[in-house]
Length: 168
Image 1 (cartoon, helix red, strand yellow):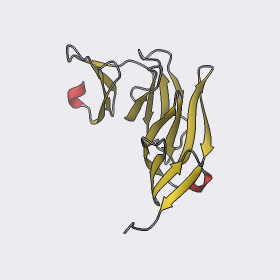
Image 2 (spheres, helix red, strand yellow):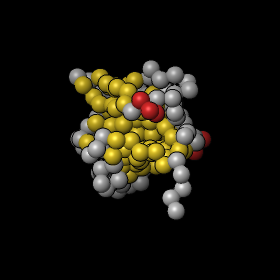
Image 3 (cartoon, one colour):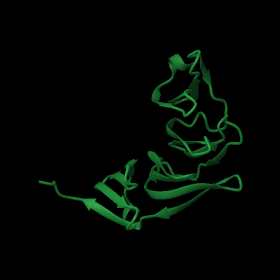
């Protein structure tokens, strides 16, 4: 099946295994045997664009249909598929422990609570922009690549900077 699939990304898990994120499925590559096997969970066929592993090794998958959360072994999936067709989840970044940011049209804070994915809109200045990139630097600031340019969220100051000119 993997030979007929379109591969979006490969990421390495904390345990050394790899996740192959593809249009029609999510696959695992076992670290010791390099055996490729489909990961069987609800949401694995959502054209997964990316994935993150949080502090307790739970997995967060994001796609053109929304967000799926599973435990480390792909059990107990929870999904938020309330995103509209234009609102593809393009990126996610781990902020702390089990709190993430998801970039779609606007930016959302995402977490698990009582087995459900919860989310809330943040940074209203970005509400109408598609967010394509999220990166947390060593200083704890989050860089945001959006339709209207590059931003940096200074977490200590809780302030958003917009880089709208070329630094000389």
